[in-house]
Length: 86
Image (cartoon, rainbow, N blue to C red; front, side, top):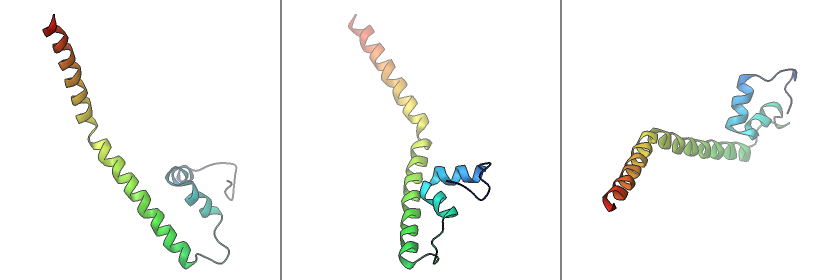
């Protein structure tokens, strides 16, 4: 994709593309007649899909410490089991 001045890529271009490549493309290639009613509906559906996906990622990221604690407890239990069987 190219911007008006394709000699550089801005941080907002990278962020927009990372969020949604289609959003980035439409920024520089808008529909000739403007957005249609169907296009607006689809855009809203895409926004909602991204919101759900990002919400799930945020929830999982918030529980990262818990996963490490559970993994450490599992390792300790395995070591304890091996030592107990000796």
